[in-house]
Length: 305
Image: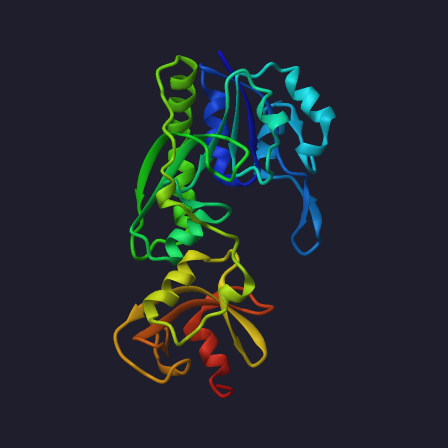
């Protein structure tokens, strides 16, 4: 069996971990994930989805604050004598000392068609920029940011209505087979990774709060792409009556109106003027409240608009 240590934190890697664990070809020796973090109104410590699966299936779990600075965990991982490390949205940068532990390589799953969108937010950036396709790459991890040789690529179409949650889930669903084929190919010496072309490099930097604030002078398509690109995490927003209104779902429609003003409202939603066209708000989340239909929100605040 191929001995693997899996590094991951959010649920995008859950299907991959489950697949490796259930496979007759792979032995998941251990899991490395981020420390438990407070969440919810009570701020109680919660384990990551990856840790939850591992503990339920008696897989040893390590939770370094920074694995680069914790040699005792590095030594513990060496004792498993792994063939590969597999990283998928782990959330920490690995040092060369860590990368040198497995017998073969450290394999990373990256949610873009490298070299495009190296960095932290490839899923969000692809949608925000209005791309019609993105994908998944398996790559050999090197010290630079997502710059290693690419093992495999899979193209995933992006529809005009797909949001980041839907794309996140689709990438999570399609990743296990790629991991299997990559690890098996490298282990058997039948797969030759290819160097990335530096000409096509662009970065997917972390989103800032300023970027998430809706600029109504932009076109309805641009704003719609922003909304679906960061749906619920962290969400595009605007300010109304000194309150943050997060926008969850929209659709661009034809028409014109004063920029940033409500042009029309109906049972379908609330239409706001943009630099080009109109944007119909379908679902929003006012500050301090839960998600609601935009028409219901408008009925409660129309006297203030």
